[in-house]
Image (tube, rainbow, N blue to C red; front, side):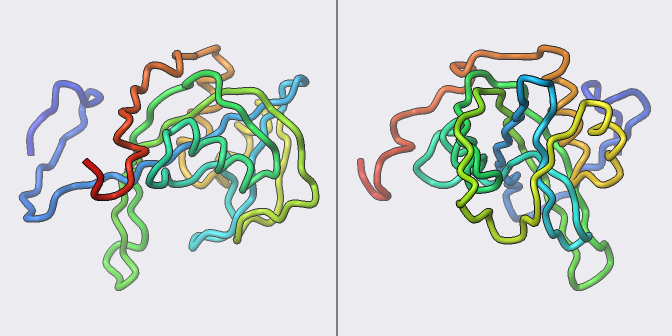
Length: 184
């Protein structure tokens, strides 16, 4: 172990030699807020029980992060959402049930977006596992932190509330993203 100059003070970093390439899971999240300042969180089943999360999910092949964010927002909340700015890029590690057969060690690279809240489609079914949507004040988001799926839920919202915004162009998407597999 050694001290990493970019890690927080007092944090030791352990480098483990492995034959597999490390691949973080890329996710996109919508920081959805109404005019009254209330933030949308979804309540979903997880292996750890019911948890609160931003409308979020995995980036899929053939879509830009902003497109993936709009898709996930609609699928998980039944609200149209148009990303207008990048709130931030976040990295977090999650270790589920260490020392068991169900153990998982996952690193998430999350791209969180602010945007325009669009039409609500109340007849649309929500993604599998989602049981409800909740509009919470910033204080209610803070107070519910123990129920958040990850610390990134609150961090994205806190950064949004502070006014942190980056241009959408901060993430360049090469046209090869939209090329069919095997195309030149």
